[in-house]
Length: 287
Image (cartoon, rainbow, N blue to C red; front, side):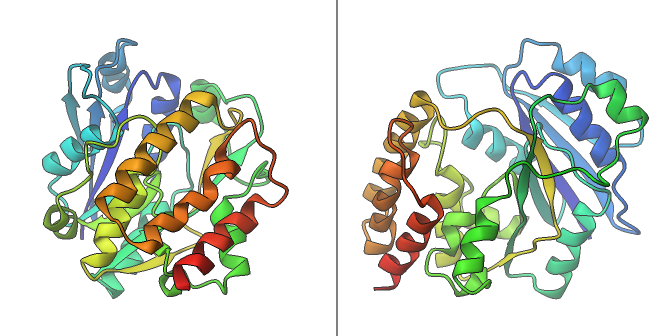
């Protein structure tokens, strides 16, 4: 299988170096790998950084000038358009992962081609690791997850089978997501009208579900990032704007159930059981 990793980045700095190093260490057997880096108008020397670390990787570098229309949806669509692989794996540049991450994605898609696969993103403690230390001796062994991926907790409460959820599409987080390229093209990729933070990947997941795809969550297809604090007022405003677009575009009760998350994501509100609110969304969609 030909695998294309789509990696959008904007001023990712040393994080991109760590991510590319983790990709270079992937153990894919006989499968081929290309990495499509979409530089979304960075001004931090991203092009120069890639030139120092691309040994051992088949890299496709695309530079998009920064405009008012820039954002994650447009950058990922550009990457999907330039990808040549059968399978597209989406990762964010501020993540690192074990050498078997991509192999786990491939394994699932070899068994079932009509699949959306996602895995957890655990957050480590404060204090990111310098690139030099990661290159030299960092190991995943013994690294504690400061915050486990919320989907682990939600699925535990709801029976563990992502495909059985009415709201499986909600959990299609594009930091660790794979779909065959033909399906992404069939549904038109990401909706570039979603700007800022939040829900552009869930909305893509919604259309992929309606396209007939199955969903799976592999708890062992894991990647890590470093803790950077919680929700901000700006992100919350982005999420609410994107929610309005989502509910207008898909005016069904399943999408409308997302409104139950409004106060959960509001940084000015304390919700005792945030995980329970996600469970409430699923139960509302079922009813």
